[in-house]
Image (cartoon, rainbow over the protein chains, first blue to last red):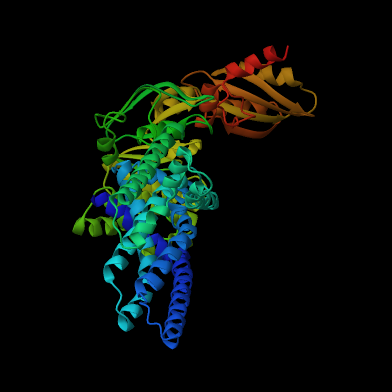
Length: 255
Length: 338
C-alpha cells in the first residue's frame, strides 16, 4: 500500500512538472466551460420562450443542462484519456527507469495500481473543472444534487475503466505516440460499439452493444444507479489491470 | 555473498549466457570483464531479479533470485548502463523517491538522502533538475540511487561508459571508496578499469566464463619473465642474423625473436631467463658492436593481452561485434548454401 502511494505520488509529480497536466486541464476547462455555457444559454432561451407563450411547462435544470453536459464530457474524455495514460509505462521503458522499478523491493501490482491510480486522480482533477462550472447552476438554480453526484461517479468510473485499458497499451510500446494512438482507437471503438444494435438485434450485436463503454454511462447520467453498469466498469478495470500485470511479467521473460 | 551455479539465459534466437558459474565473497570488488555482447548485462539482470534465468540458480546473500526475489532486491543496489533517472525530477526529490521505493521512511529518509548526496558529491545540485545535469553528474546520481538503502551488494553495469577521462577517474575513486561497506560487482569492457578498481576479475566471452582470478595473479602469471623490445640501427654491414646471433650469445638471454626490419633498423623481442634481467647486457652488447640503440622498452603483459589470449582473439580485431550468433551457426551457414 505504501509502495503504491510512493509510485502514485511520483507519477502525479511528473504530470504536474511536465506540461501535460496543465495543457489537458486548460483544454478541458475551455471545452467543458463552453459546453456548460451553450447548454445554459439554450435553457435560458427556451424558458423565456415558454414564458412568453404562456405555457409554463416544467423545465428541469437536471434534464436540460446537467445530463447533456455530462454526456458530452464523457465523449470528450474518450479523446483526452489516452493522453493521460500514454506515458505511464512507455516513458519508463524508453528512459530505462523501468529497471529501477522492477529491481526495487515492490510488487508488480503495486507499481501498476500506483501508476493507474495516479492517472485516475488526474482524471478526477479534470472532472473537478466541470463541477466548478456546475456550481453556478447551484448558485442561481435549484437542481437535484443526487443525479449530479451519480453522474460524476459514473464519469469517473468510465474514465478509470478506459485508463486501465490504456495503461495496458502503454506497456506494449516504448513510444508514447503509438500508445496514445492505439488507446484512442480502442476508446473510440468502445464508444461506437453501442451502434451495433441499431442495425440488428442478433445475440452478437447485443453483446457488442453491451461492451460499449458509453452506453453504461447513460443510466448514471440520469441519476439511476444500476449495479449492472457498476459491475461492468469494475470488471473493465480489473481486466485492464490484469492484462497490464501479464504484460509487465512477460516483459521480464523477454527483455 | 553471490553464488551462481550453471546459469543459462536463452533468448528466442541465441544463448546470451551459457552455463556460467562463479562466486563472489563478501567485501570483494569483482570486475566482470568481456567484450560487448559477452553476456555481462544479462548476468547482472538475472542477479538483480530483472529477469529470471532459463536454467541454473543464482543466490544473493543466501536468497535465490527466482524463489525469493523480494529479499534479494532489498539487499541489492543496481546501477544499469544508463542511470535510471527521471529527467523531469529534481535530484533531491528523485533520491527521496528511490529511498521510499526501497523501504526507507520518515526521518531516516531525509538523513540517507543527505548522506548519499554528500558521498557522491552531488549535494550542490540537489535542487537542480536531472535533465540539466551533465553526464558525469547523472552517473553520480545513479550511484547515489544505488547505495541509498545501504545494500550489501552493489551491481554496477559499465559505471564509467560515456564519461570523459576526468569523470572516469572520479567515478572510479568513488567506487573504490564504497568498497569496504559493500560487495561490488561491476562490468566493463575497459581493461585498465579492472586493473584500477578491482581485486578479482571474471573474464567472460560469448556467454561463458573464460577465467576467474585475482587481478594480481593474472598479470603476474603472464609476465613471469622479463621481456624487452629492442630497436637497433646497424652500420649496414651486419645483417639481421648477425645481430640475432650476437644477442643470443649474451648470458641471461633465453630467447631472441626477430620482429621486423626496415633498411638498417631492426626490431627484436628479447626474453631473459627466469630470474635474470638482461637489459643492461643487451644495451652494452649493441653499443659495443658499434650499432645504434634506438629503443629499449619493457614488454610486460598488460591485462589487455591476457584478455585477448584468453578469449582467443587476435589483437587486431580487439572488439568483436556483438558476439551472440555463436560460432556454431557460422559453421553451419556454408552447409546451407550448398
